[in-house]
Length: 345
Ligand SMILES: Cc1cc2nc3c(=O)[nH]c(=O)nc-3n(C[C@H](O)[C@H](O)[C@H](O)COP(=O)(O)O)c2cc1C
Image 1: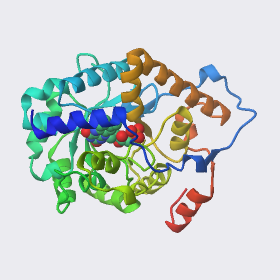
Image 2 (image 1 turned 60 degrees about the vertical axis):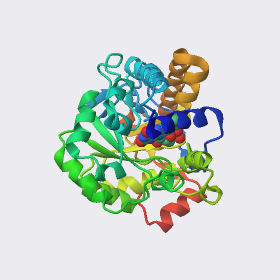
Image 3 (image 1 turned 30 degrees about the horizontal axis):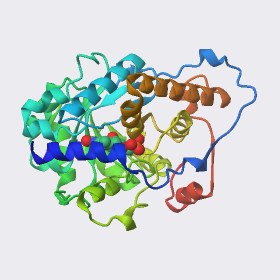
Image 4 (image 1 turned 45 degrees about the horizontal axis):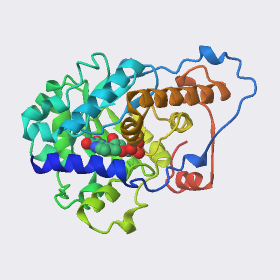
């Protein structure tokens, strides 16, 4: 087993057994306005949307979790199967392990259980300085993915013993990749959020969408400090809360994926009302799968769908596009963020 494979197993074990969430999404500071006369039938509301030109039944992606070991293969297969049956998008974890060791490819391959799912590959941005666009494209093609998430994780790398904290030249490497490949590339934070400035740099590099990976959910500074023993206590609240990051990122006028601490269908509705096009959830899927199996995961997706549908109904919206246009009331912390950062709402 090489270092990357060992790291994957340690990440899974820490996420399953320890407290790994930190910070506040600020979704409590987003208020949707109740409409007593929705003039629509709850059952006729459409929760479907389009992402990368394809239809999803719910604006939801099972965000990148794993790959690179036997346990990961089972997790990917189980969760991708749920994504296929429920019409969600699905992301595999970092494919670095399979680029280093091609025999690990099957631990990322989910097409046999998810033939029509919108499937995204994954690689870290610092790896783009060492791995050519051709090799990255081969990894994406090897699993039949429709696009690639490039994770951007400076907060994680500095607390990892083996972390790569040289981010100089990363934006150029990303731009080189975006120009060279024929599939959409998504710039993806993993828990510290994307600022307006970062969103503009990502747009300039040529990404097709931005996953904000905001503060308030799984904390990679925390997880990797548990592994390394480095003290990350002063950085637990570091980052841009997910709700604020949606508003920051949407200024770049690219599709926005809201990930980081979304836990229920009301969080999803709030994210969409702030301007997100798609929502992403990771940690709950991993934990529910481990505790309650595939049926538990399907029940969770049904509960997300039901809450989301209820939120559409109670805001008088017939579909997701209408929800993106409703007016929202911001609580004091999020409002202050918008004012001081001079963001549009
Ligand atoms: C066990 C685990 C492993 C993850 N591995 C990756 C990864 O390899 N690449 C990546 O881009 N994100 C990875 N993530 C981050 C998630 O995709 C997501 O951005 C983050 O966990 C925030 O969402 P959450 O609060 O719903 O968990 C991982 C998350 C978990 C829980």
